[in-house]
Length: 219
Image (cartoon, rainbow, N blue to C red; front, side):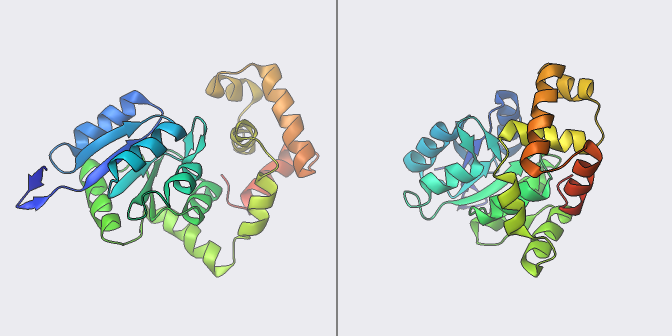
């Protein structure tokens, strides 16, 4: 077992669907934690957690085969001592709140530095909750009741993951062509998704959609 300063390194699994990102994280953590496995999707992540029983899992929120919450749901009872730290590019309120409600002990964004990530892993491993500064406010607001979490979940449950991505970009003011370029889909597909989002949320325009998303702190 690897050691640092006379103590065993924290056993960590990295879960992200981008191989280059996983490699970068592993390089940052080398010598500081013991990366025992990597995974790129939900099934692979569950297997890695069950097989290796890590202390901490660095978990992306959006994954092929489901998402980070699905990984936690399927592996919680099979590796009860493992703690999950979300490491995501997303800083949207529904992702933060949904992931914490799903069982994560913390949520940090991918702008975090290597030393900060090592510190976050150590804190989560010892039972602390860790958040990037801006994201902590979402969690506090949710528990204080100023964000209606149940309503967010109910509305968002009507949307597919792709519709959520399109919704967020449109609400941020992206043109259809920009959304298409960002998500590598056609403009016609964007139009179809927008129509579906507006119908499911019972909204009549992208301006109403922006107001809806802003009120729920989804941008």
